[in-house]
Length: 127
Image (cartoon, rainbow, N blue to C red; front, top):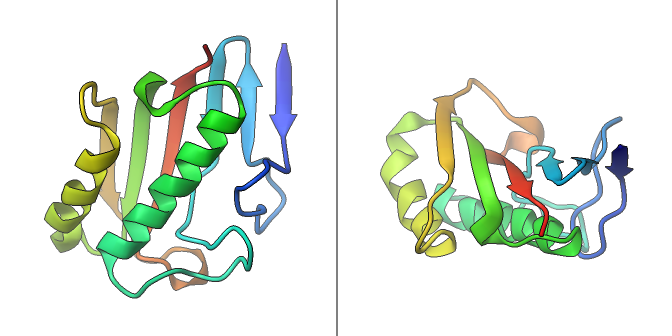
């Protein structure tokens, strides 16, 4: 059974015609999370570390609100506008995934919505 989640409490609203997350059975797929303040929808921070933290907080909020937690995130995809910020991003990422890191892809892209430096999407098992 497929279920869409468009207005997840505590998470930023989608900025386009897409769902914040979609559940299929016990698997939860999140849309890419930009470093947006959930209350204002404005971009947070000017550096990749600050933006990574906000994107990961948004991901965490969605995953937890929809019946899972960060330990059950099995895959993430990271989009960076500057691959040279990879190490700064990794430092923040490690704070969110202590014991069991998910599989991950990280790619450099030329641009992201709202001028963000990072976007993070995830796949999690619902518990």
